[in-house]
Image (tube, rainbow, N blue to C red; front, side, top):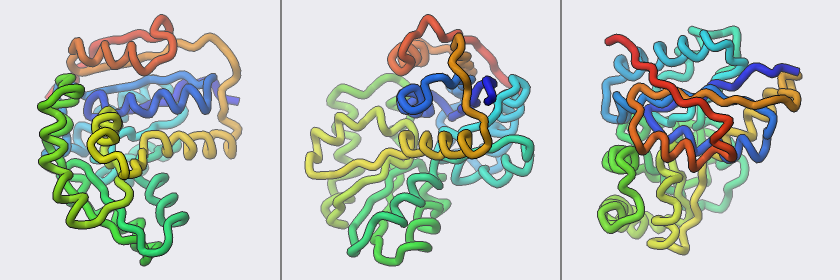
Length: 269
């Protein structure tokens, strides 16, 4: 057993979409979360910049004695996973892409058309295609970068006409031209848009890596006898900019926000 917390980090609030599934599947686990809200979005930044920011945050999580790190960000998972594993070989580090990509390559058959939407960096990396079509040639995979989604979500612009128009701008032709049946939400921010997308495209099945990664967390903790025992939980959430929207999202995703301490932590440039 291991009662140390699990570290999660993301470029902003998107990684919080992993937390409800964690609390359902592993209710005894504590969280230390870092959202780099002052420097979001990462998806349009140079890879060297993304890697430097990721080193800062992962080092900070390790300083809080986490037993595992979940890179709750597709952009960082696509560009920095191997580098972060080399930097911190003493603890398991899980990216958000591999679990869902492995599941798709294992379960899909018959030439199904699947779309992946993500940031520019995630799409440019080709990581979804490399894993999925590299292992299952029958899957027809199509990718689309949607860079405007993250800044709008970070500002809380979700349930309104502006977001719906943005979704239609990116997805109308993408879905129609490729006859998509399923869509991977290839950014942890994008599950905040599930209701919008379901309403606009009711026949489309959405695949959520934010939920799938928790099954991998559970598997690794069980295999290494690292599950937490029932105890008092106190989650820590850090942000590089404590915006009102960050606090609102914290209140929405944690079952009991009385167990959550939110603090400011900005890194020196």
